[in-house]
Length: 602
Image 1 (cartoon, one colour):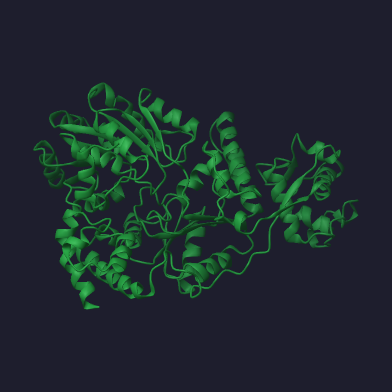
Image 2: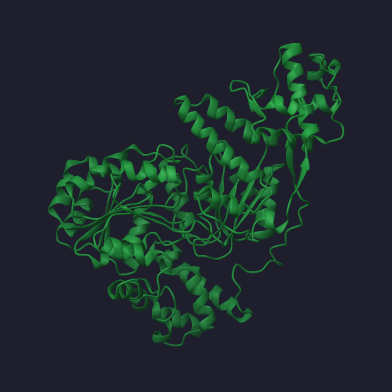
């Protein structure tokens, strides 16, 4: 149960009447001086779990965040709410830092954001010693985990916070972690005695869809044109080259898209990120370096054009869609070559055998999610130790796939690999194996006399794409693996069981996909009365112009969900507008009259 002070702060500053599930208990624990480790999905309201305790406790809440490029936006968003916030990082000059330091020492800041590397600087430690710290919030805490997806050595020094400031509560927050990762976070941050709060990992507003990759560019374009025309979204690719190609392809086809990867100069990266945050309807095509801490609430889709390396990474990246709770899409296209490439990367990667084994297990879990015939959401929640029911809002629920007995096709593939190895001392990749099975007399087959093998042409009952699906699923089930240097297919310890007929191989058959509705036919992200739609668009135009004039992202002014509620309720006074969710005292005073004028203009 939240205290009256916390509830009053929520209403006055943030404009909401009630906490989301799980928030109140965390806030009371930290506000009372307790340490906490919080797992809450992206969009679940993690930031309030430290912001409100910082506002109700004496002193300044110190937030340790790796997101230097986003600190300005985070501080701008808080200042728009009337919260006194500042940051210290390497982007500031000496005079800017001195102003923030003076504000901190004078007790004028509610929240101070620091990059973790700032705590290496003795002057920063001295500054914190001289001021009054109400709490330490360690954001993106998975960065401390070596088997999380973004290990940051700078975070390791944070274990010393408790020794230096034993009476200051600490709260570590992350959007995703298995029990193994959670235990490592607690150990490395010296939070063994902290209370753990694990919220539901379910994001019911996100529709999870995974499909075989045939022509990734065209599949992506079809998704955007048919379902997300004019929507903001993120497209993830594995390589910089792929990012550039897909951004250019989308732009050539009338969808404004910007690239983001580490190969771009810092100024271009910053400019593209800023445009994505500040403009409506832009698509950003990026490597996974992009997205952590992105607080854009109206991202309507996240698309993956390459297979993520782990379920944790996939969950974190897809979680950037629909932070406002409105319907959104998580779409992934993956194929045989993705599996081959990732297996090669793991086998040839750095680290000891145990590290490679962990990476391989992460990939196995991701492949199991891709190949399941069950509800995707149930599989996803199960990975994080949470039970779930079939959701009715993922592709396997909406168009259930079939299983079929793939034992004989599996034996044909494995037999071909065996014959090449034993009879010819040769190893080849999937494409050549399939050519042999289909009886294709191409140059490579003829060159090696592979048309003379007994297995030549024994697989004409399946098409090329079907054979690729068979090989992909054999790799996913561990019945084949990839030779690390050249990507050739080789048998595993379990292959023999299939060849002897001692093991049945069940496979997934992709269902026929129903053509997606066009952008004109599909329902709006949230049901608005017809008469409210032009009002919402008018409010959005006002918000865009206001945000541009102030040089801040549009969501800093108001979220889409707030504008939709205003467009539906049509308040005619400041008192009525104050009842809308997301309209706190400061925003009411700053923008209230402008909102009412915009409504009256219609």
